[in-house]
Amino acid sequence: MRIIFMGTPDFSVPVLDALVDAGHDIAAVYSQPPRPAGRGKKDRPSPVQARAEELGLTIRHPVSLKGGAEQAEFAAFNADIAVVVAYGLILPQVILDAPTHGCLNIHASLLPRWRGAAPIHRAIMAGDAQTGVCIMQMEAGLDTGPVLLRETLNIGTEETTGQLHDRLSQLGSASIVQAIADYGTLPPQIQSEVGITYASKIDKAEARVDWTKPATEVDRQIRGLSPFPGAWCMVGDERVKLLGSRLADGSGKAGQVLFGFTIACGTGAVEITTAQRAGKRAMPAMQTLQGLDLGVSLD
Image 1 (spheres, rainbow, N blue to C red):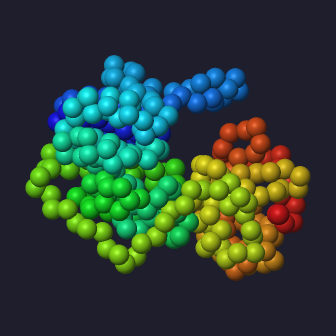
Image 2: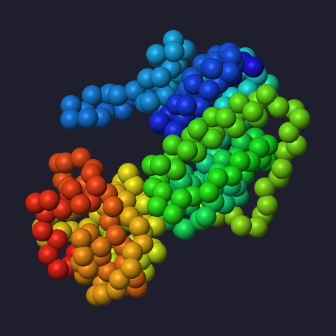
Image 3: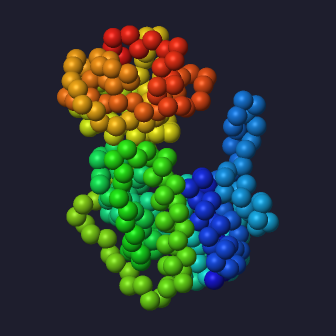
């Protein structure tokens, strides 16, 4: 098929590669505009734009698709279908209708659970045992369209958002290639009105660990916010990111250091497995402890 690809972050890059490897004609790649990044705050292209440039593909990065000129240019690519994955802009109806077969979205959840911006984070933070990807025919509502293909995977008991992100990206890549190959034979499944949840964007205010909460919640918070924005706590006067954890035996006053990097919570305890001190790289927690005095409790 002749495809317009629309995506922005790292999650979308393997999908673009899979479509190219499958032999599809990529008419154009749409991505968010370059934004200031790094110490110099120079404009940096998105991961998708960078990969598209390596592949020699036509790139567009409008700030909006609401204008007539942008919509006319989009339609002029005469695409059979558009593939949208973590693009980051709302698509007006005229854009959704422009390709012959409309727009397909790869959504990293088992719809209608976790519609919205942060489905991977929210699945881990909620303690879901399973998640997956849905290939959805897009319509005007937020992740409300009929599902053409659904693939499920289990969430590991110590899995972080970063690890699950990578697995779902690969699953989404394989699923969209299959969905396009079978397009026209896959019966659209209308989403259930039961079990709808919304994965709101992660707020950095959610990142500070509250040790008075049950260990299960603290563990999910740490893993769900890893690697970004990263759950954190204060160790004395130093702010330390907690990027990996597991449930542990033990109990004590909330925030009490039981042994090693195992911390008592409101009920139960959590062992920190990966941590990051300010200005340093993430490393196994026991290495982080070198030169770091946990004291008797954390805040």
